[in-house]
Structure formats: structure tokens, C-alpha cells
Figure 1 (cartoon, one colour):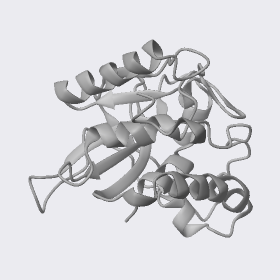
Figure 2 (cartoon, rainbow, N blue to C red):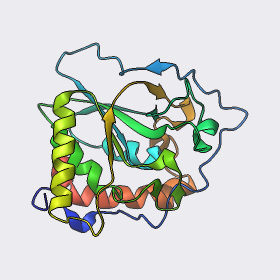
Figure 3 (tube, rainbow, N blue to C red):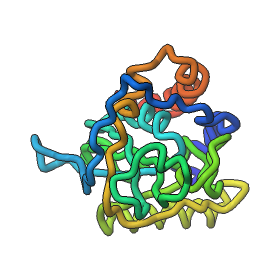
Figure 4 (cartoon, one colour):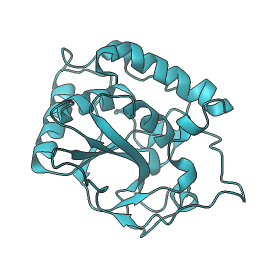
Length: 221
């Protein structure tokens, strides 16, 4: 796996996290985040879906939006038991849900294996319920697979990472079937694009994006 994953850029700025996430103001009107098993794919049958949990979804969303072959990225919640959860409920750590990003992508341009390569590079997959300063089960590392092929590939690469001691500790990424995807409130969507000059974006997300862009230059749109 070392030959496939650029280990020198692993754990991008993990010492800082999403602490202090901006809460919605009274002017924000969260959209109903009803159960979405997958996002709609209307224009082509070639598109596929992938869902990842890798810490703060603001950061993960901003990164995957720049990959070739990725049509759209939505922030949301998955993996728990609470129906139609709110952000405040997620933050309690009691819903069982993870902050996730769900991608619609063209597998003829970017394969699921390549998405996994990015996924394992942009966060710490060896950390239980913690990414940087963000602590809680809602930040656990997770791959929610949409097919047996995705399951097999995720389990294969996780095993290979551990067999080759690619990290100083074992990879603990949860690999589980995708069930319900709950779209996060409107103010979470395209957060970096809409708030690039906000302090959190300048000092937390932008440095992560810069490192990602250097490591995956050939895969950017």
C-alpha cells in the first residue's frame, strides 16, 4: 500500500480540528434533511456514489470537490440510529451518526480505489473517535460502502495498510454498509466555497487544501 498512498502527507494538520464550528444564526434556515439513501442521479447511469467519514465534513467536502470525476459532494450524517438528526443532536455524540461526505463520481475518471487513496491520506485512520481536536464518535473514521465491490476494496486496502505497517498504529476505520444518508443543514453545504474568508476556513481548511493539492496535483479538476 505504501506504493499506492503518499504516506509523507498523511495526517494533514491533525493537530488542529473543527473546534469552534460556527453555529447557525437566527437567519439560517436549515433545510429538511430527510432520509436520502443516495443522492439523485438523473443525467447519466455512469455515476456512482461513495460515502466517507473523515472528521469535520467542512474540510472533507472541500477536498473531494476538487477531484477529477467528482460531480457533487454533500455533507450529511450516516451510520447511527437517530432518524432525521440535527447538527446539535450529532454534536452530542449520542446519535451514533458520523459526519460524512457523500460523493457522486464517475468511476471511469476516478475509481473507488483512488477515492480510498485520498480518504486515507487526508485524516488519521488510526484514531478512535477523534480527529485532531475534534473528539467524539461523530468524528470516527468510516467508509460506508454502497456495493460489495466497494466493501471488498475498502477491506482489502485497510488490511494491506495494516499488514505493511503503513502507519505507526493500526488502521481502525469502520467499514460498514450504507443505509440512510441524512443531508446536513443548508449552512453546512459548500461551506468552504461560501465562507473562504472566514477565520476557520483561512487557518484550518485552507492549509489542508494546499497540502492536498500538492500531493494529488495530477488528480485535480
